[in-house]
Length: 128
Image (cartoon, rainbow, N blue to C red; front, side, top):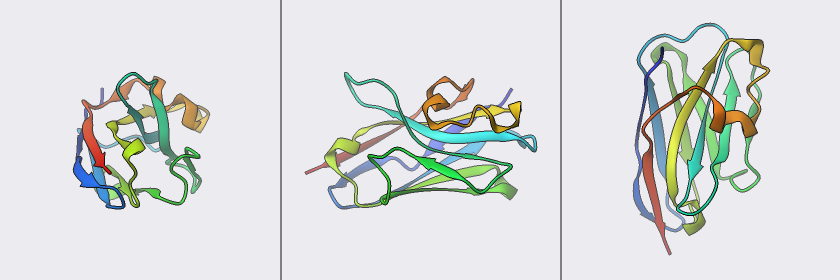
């Protein structure tokens, strides 16, 4: 089992930036996927960004490309989500999620909402 804990959410004005962090309770295996998904009130969950530990590729939702960047600190088992040029439509609860093993085949962005490990979420509110 892996427990994930997000931090870094808050309230900002449009155009501002936030950096989300996700702390894992233990070291991940050599093959895992980690990423972020979000859910706004009344809307479906949406994969935002993801990466596979065994490669350099990252995936982003079209709505955040060029504004959000996912990175990781392997030594601390911490992925980050740098969010720039925030828009009111980015307002949502953001969740860190992970899946271990499977050789990366489950790392598709659309699957982030189904990964078995996820945190409690951190709220991001962007005002116009």
